[in-house]
Length: 327
Image: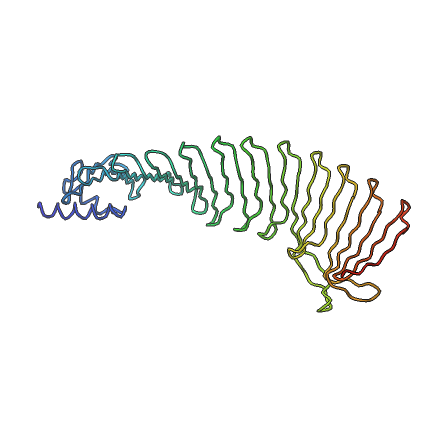
């Protein structure tokens, strides 16, 4: 009889170690009088208690060398509660089955909450991470195995960053300062950045990057091709555009500067290929300069070995035209 009880106890210990003590084993524990008492295997032992006979609920404590390791609660053959402890008796892990679809898991370090997972149903999960002070640091919503939204927090509990995803690809990214002011926002197109705006402390746009595509003519292949385009715009404190740069395939294509009132002051265009009197030239730069009223005053066309210079009067007439070779 003793040996039979010992085998049943050892089987229960082995099963509880893998968090899968079966109903048949629990039935054997009851039939052999091993409920509400200690069952042991050398230094490893369990305290088994029948908490609720009607709902077949068991409470089990697992010890090693007298130190509490884990606590289990089974209800109708489901592990509904699991707690793990460190050597000092503090909880390091806790998993609760709320109902058939929902469960909650938490992890702690030195008694402080570090991580929490809530499974709302088979498709929806919320993951949380925490600061040392216990405040929420990060919250992630996962739907059907893919991240739907990630939210990060400052230690003062205000949101610091919010990332949204669409079918696993980035959709938007908002960043906030500690006072909850939006300081940067990026929108995505097909998972790639499309427009990025930066704001000052009162919500005015101070700069924006626009990522797009543009078709340009390839003279070598005699056809148009699609290239990556990026625009950078900067604004003054009252929201007026003062700088505008355009890049094609990471090479500068256009630079514009404006006055504080929005009047165009200068423009520089960069060309890989440029035709002058039907003659093809490579790496041409065209400079244009304007006065405070936006009237063109100078124009310079620069190649590798020469440049043209034009000076205009206030009516737009050329008053100086010069050709200079670069030695």
